[in-house]
Image (cartoon, rainbow, N blue to C red; front, side):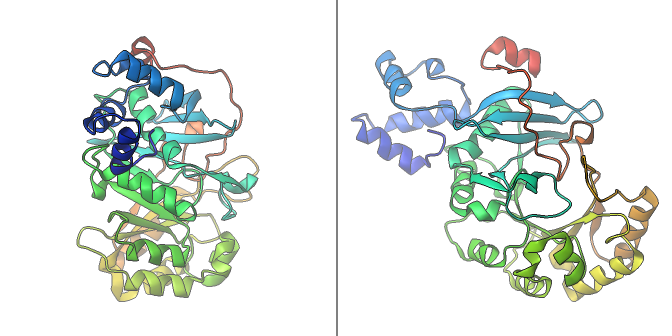
Amino acid sequence: MKGLEYSELENWVQEQGWKKFRAKQLAKWIHGKKVGSYDEMTDLSKDIRNYLKENTELNALELITYEKSKEDGSIKLLWRLEDGHTVETVFIPERGHNTICVSTQVGCAVGCTFCFTTKDGLIRNLTTAEIIDQYIQTQRFVGLENRISNVVFMGMGEPLANYENVKKAVRIMTDDRMLGLSNRKITISSSGIIHQIKKMYQDRDFPQVRLAVSLNAPDQKTRQMLMPISETNSLEELMETLNSLPVKTGYRIMLEYVLIKGVNDRPEDAHRLARLIGKNKKRYKVNLIPFNPYPGSPYERPEKERVERFHKILWQYNIGAFVRWSKGQDISAACGQLRKKDLGEKVSFLTKESLKANG
């Protein structure tokens, strides 16, 4: 049910022989109140609720376990999918708002050498319902009073490689009759699949949201070593594409740059990055992300002094650059760390009592 857009929900309701207004009721309970069972939909008759239970699935995910950071309050949730695979979602409390980092694939095929998620390769795309349910069930878990206003498609997987399901999820998220989130509060992060980025900007049915691109190097050789996808999506062509996109005011493109000690964090790398951006500095914001270590990684996080030096050089070029020390590091919930497969002890939170305990 959570994978249907509002028009599809209306059509489905009428196909069951029900009045069209039932779609509004269902959307209110599923997306507005974010209920965990059909029994909670008290303004629907018992017959309708029984029909829904027998013929549809309300929840696309099952919570297996979760970890809460003692350092910053971030929560990493591990979900089991219907086929037994697992994905992770991260809730990030921030000053003045709350953010959720959603996954779009089981695993990832991009193969970035600094990312833990990609070690198992790509298993499959998530459905629209599985993407939407990450938001709905996480919101239930933290409590409706702790509204999640920001969504970043930066979890497991390459969002634009699951284009249609991500597009549909964004449409549901931004529909005022459903989740009703602001377009400006949604960010899609891509490794830089050029034809998919162009497709998103040319697609009139894809809501205007923010774009973040993983750059991670100021030159083709280094980027191709870190991100094999750069072999077919060269840095030069990528920047030409980004420089030509019709960017609205307030929608600056975010260039994500993971700083790795001795690889891409030297002063000359900062100067090269500045020259790469060149005269288009008002088009971009640079997020500098100190590398988040994981077991067996060949890379190291640079010292704070190296990070600050890199940052300072970009500011000298009047480039809007910001250091983002990833949250949730103590629970392996930071950027590039999502891969957990140990299901641990099953957790249920489908009752009001457990919601209060976990919130």
